[in-house]
Every structure is written in structure tokens, then in C-alpha cells.
Image: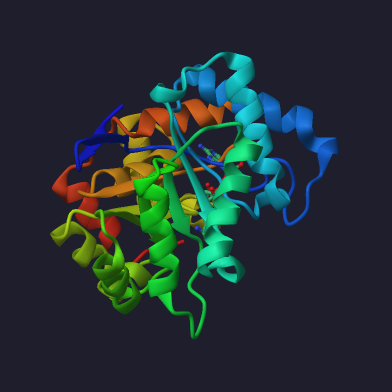
Length: 273
Ligand SMILES: NC(=O)c1ccc[n+]([C@@H]2O[C@H](COP(=O)([O-])OP(=O)(O)OC[C@H]3O[C@@H](n4cnc5c(N)ncnc54)[C@H](OP(=O)(O)O)[C@@H]3O)[C@@H](O)[C@H]2O)c1
């Protein structure tokens, strides 16, 4: 595994996403065995960064992540757990209350990273960051960050955070360069902020011809090349999700593939499907 070394931390280039673990917008306990199997195999394979949120399966995702970790006897300090507060909960008291609820569902004393999940129009973020700063001071949150924040909001957040913002978690993949075009990636790279790429492989682009050619030449899958395109970039990490242990293993291994400048340039060009 390759890591990003940042603010005295080592964060794995590839972590594990948990959207659909435990359900979607609502908890769906009928899928618990499948979800727990996926989490157990991810832990066994060596994933240490788990990305969840209070609104994934209405909190059930956090419950299952916590349960799988406890049942596997994984030492808390070896793991890096991210959760997120949703946009309707960004008032001071709500942030404090929601963080407590996430910790209770996870069965943990602290979060490694707590993110504002989405911006909310008209929100006074001074209020939100006052709560996040307090959570860091109290040791309930180790690091804070944001998600889906554009450049202006990211700069505003960096000014309000008492400790360095660790990440902006945004959609980023070969066909989706919105956060390159809006300047967020460059700002992150210049200011020691991680860009966490979400939805890195979901769409049909993984069947593109350029990806296929590079994957074939290296004897790996197109999904691995799509992930390596992200992890080859400085200050970029990613959090693919998979229920399939084979895919999970391939995704983890993709962190060790460093693409050449020529391969990156080929994939940076106009993308053919
Ligand atoms: N902050 C936000 O607003 C936000 C938004 C969206 C997502 N996220 C986070 O980012 C994580 C990842 O994004 P995502 O779940 O949207 O999409 P994704 O990880 O890009 O794609 C997941 C899909 O790709 C398939 N897949 C994964 N690896 C594969 C492989 N090696 N080979 C073949 N198929 C593979 C999975 O199927 P199988 O199960 O069959 O492998 C699954 O259907 C989420 O789980 C969540 O934690 C955050």
C-alpha cells in the first residue's frame, strides 16, 4: 500500500467506501449478512480507512462498520474512520449532537475524520466550524474536512478551521474532472489538503479503449488502472466500494500501481468510451 504523508499522518491511498452498506436512504437489515461479509473481507484484506456517513442507510452503515470492526477484534488505533454530518445538521448544537450519535452507532470514542457532507445554501459556516473546532479540542474528532465544497467554500472553510482541513471529498474519476476544472484539485495540492475521490469507478467508462490497452499491457484490470490514475496523482486518495472480495483485493492492489507520465497523458486526453 502506498500512503499520503500529511500533517504527521499516513493515510492509505485506497480506502473503503460504504454507500449501500446497510441499505441506501433507509436501513435495510435484510442485507446485513451481505454487508457484514463485505466489511469482514475488506478488513481481512487490509483496508484500514473506512468512509461512512450518518445518512448512509440512516445510520445503519455506521452500526455495521462498528460491528464488523469489533467482531474482527481490529485495534481501533490501526484504523482510520471517516464519517459525515449532513447539510440539515450544520447548526452548532446539531453538529455536536450528530457527532455523538455517529460515535454511539460506531461504538467508538473518536472519529479520525469528520466531514461536512454537502454545502447548504445560505449556511453560516462559522457556526458549523465553531462546533467542529470544539469536537477536535475535546478529542472526539481527530481531523476535520468537507465534501462537495467548491473552491470558494473550501477557502472559507480553511480560514474557519483551527486545525488544518484534511480533505475535500469530491467526485473525481477519468471522465469526471469538474473539481479539476473548478480549481479545487490545484488548491488542495498547493495547500496540503487531500482530495478524496469518490465514485472512482462506478460508471461505464471502465470499458474505454485506452484503459483497456493500458490494463492489458500491464496484466491488470481496467478498474485498477482507473484507480491508479487517481492514486498516481499527488495528494489524491480514493475510496472505492465493492461487495465482491475479488474486486476489493484488486482495488487495494491498485494503490501500488504507479502509472508512467505517458500512460497518465494518454488517460488525461479526451476519453473514448
Ligand atoms: N461525499 C459524497 O457525497 C459521496 C458521494 C458518493 C460516494 N461517496 C463515497 O465514495 C464511495 C465510493 O463511491 P461509489 O460507491 O459511489 O462508487 P464506486 O466505488 O466508484 O463504484 C462502486 C461500484 O463499482 C463496482 N466495482 C468496484 N470495484 C470494482 C472492480 N474492481 N471491478 C468491477 N467492479 C467494481 C461495485 O460493484 P461490486 O460490488 O460488484 O464490486 C459497485 O457497483 C462510496 O461508497 C461512499 O463511501 C461519497
